[in-house]
Length: 632
Image (cartoon, rainbow, N blue to C red; front, side):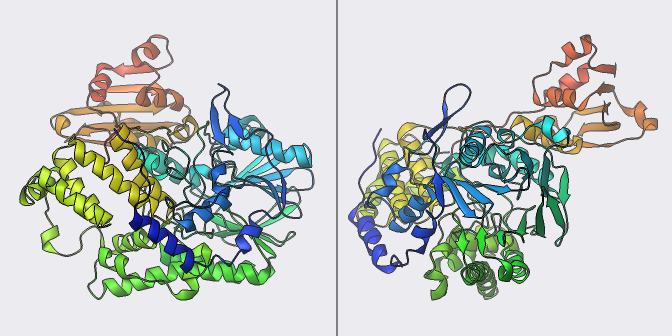
């Protein structure tokens, strides 16, 4: 339908002006991002078992060129730094693999082997990183893997660096913050379909790499597309001050729940005077509410944990590294880095609360808030991944919810009906498009996008509106300092021009699904009940999970699937009772195991009317990984 356009004078001038207002004379990050480089991969492309690429270290090579008018120079600078890839020495016995996935993988050398921190998203990228390390430093066995927190880019590649067999044999420990698995499952399964679809926008999955397409996501360039897995922790860390010694390496832990993830921890290596800040202090303002969707994070507690980290570790540290970006060297420098990160989250929290208590709404506060000059002039506080705008709105949401208090907003029409009425008031679709051409020419892309959105939700196939909206979103992307904003805008333009790309990847990997508890499994199934179609249904089934010693009841009534453990003496209330293993239960409920076949071969036994399960299954619908975003 259309192809990418050049930057309009409005955007080109704004990007040019940014060069004169940003601290480009501060080049310490340029030096630190390359400091300690030892080697890069022989082949820039990492492939899966089928030969298809899962990661390409070279696809962002264009970032070494001068920034064009189609990109914000601040984001271009950040992306060029993040795209640098290879094995880096952080300090003696501490090495990082950077630029091989969205996140970093860190290798700590112990007495006889290595400790791996955060093994990336995919087994393929993690394995390639470990091989690069071993090619340079020797074939040292993996003695432990540490997951800093519950997001998939910090554990998904674990089977590329160790095996379940090695863990079961006690050869490799898996260390994680308490609750990590529960939160990982909840995030990747409960709302996983919707998050995955929006993540395609957030990371620009379908965008061509280049000056008019994807240049990076601020935190990392993109996400790998290999096989994600999970090995359950063998050591849970639950208290700040907990100390472990693994392969001769002492580790002091600080728990930071409710910061960047609901289960997260920082930790310190006294022998190396090295501090790992997980994802709580990186070279960007992080998300308080990620654009793909998540629970709102707590900037107040985040800032307090950063203060605690300064108190506990900063004065004893010579280097700070994290699960993304490059390290910060020097006690004075890393202390100030942490203090500025702390002040950043604390300022946004406190000033948002001050303003909302004066009656300002989230939209108004986000539009007007300004950072103190010292923070504005520090590169690492810029909003490459999170942004001041959407973080302020997240803080408002955390405290006040979706409603801004104006009764006119209490019961608005849903998007399509609202759009029809707006368009009618504005003179019809063609009149709105004509007016939108003028606001586009005037450089008011924000309102142009709003007006054309009404048209597209009234007439989704209106060719002129689709074309102009694609051009509009593209200009908004070209001007964005935030990598995920750029990707969202450009993905919207891409789908308007080329059609929906759906959800290219899924985070509900088999290992993650397999880690669900019985409670979580039935929770996930209950989210699929078609409520209105099930109002009159009443089905009671019992499930005896033989390998866990659990008798669990599901009862569908009033369109709700409730479930709970029941004692043996309550058995008579069930219409059917199935006895099976947890693995078989997963197969029956999530697909892959035919119930009738399993009953026939004896792997599942049943008492009562097995057909009642078939009836229950008929009340479940399937999530849609291809739902529309820029059209109704």
